[in-house]
Image (cartoon, rainbow, N blue to C red; front, side, top):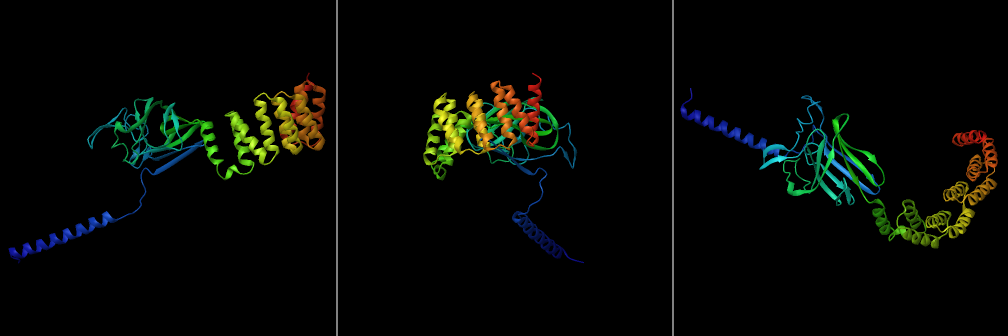
Length: 374
């Protein structure tokens, strides 16, 4: 049997051992760096329109989780309507983080407009207020590093836009995607459960591209004929800064005359109504043209209502390539546009004797049927 002093000593030793183990365990946990799966894994979505790249980084929660199926309990419940009331870090109400876990962020590589409102290039925290079953406020915050929306403050808002939430096919995993796209704008959409939240991002693509071209042409792309040819070709295609396009194409021609830069200059002059100045350039380009290029010149002339000249180029192509079914089809189109239907019918039938590819034969047959019905 132990006396009281022995019991106290034993208790002291046990307590010291426990504290030592606890300290070592706590230290080991603090120092551990391990990777385990997240319930809402990080995801990234990027889309470029024009030369503007938009990247969204977010956590991707699921509707159906280990704890059960939350279908029908997302909007208005898990994600409350209006601001969420919390008692944390002195915050009273916060928006939704538009994802899960860490801050959802969105990065724009150029200046843009979101729903028609200006937003500078950079990275922003992305938050949303689900006001009700249809109306959503999308918030772009200068704070990009906080955890979710817990440290959100309206003082850091850079932009707010109002959008309309719409019904959507079921998505178990929250994701961002592009639902409309062209060279000047894109519609980005958050999809989760049976709802979708879209917002439009646009940019002045011709201006951005032109500014970028000016910079690029001061480097290695400014040497040789190709860089300034491609730059002028772009400006001509989008009908932007025609005088600069003419300057660049002249500089390209000054380095080396090619079919490409001569035909682009002719097209610029066509757009400016300078037909007489354009024709000699086209004749010079035609001398350098291969089969497809010469056909292209013919269609360029047809587009500019220069049918006689177009017919002469198609006739030249037939002479150069008498066994090509496509050149007879093109000449037939020009004759038909000019109202010379007998000549057109002859060309389409001739094309069909030369074993044309399906798309050419289908075109011939359609025109033959149309002309024989007259």
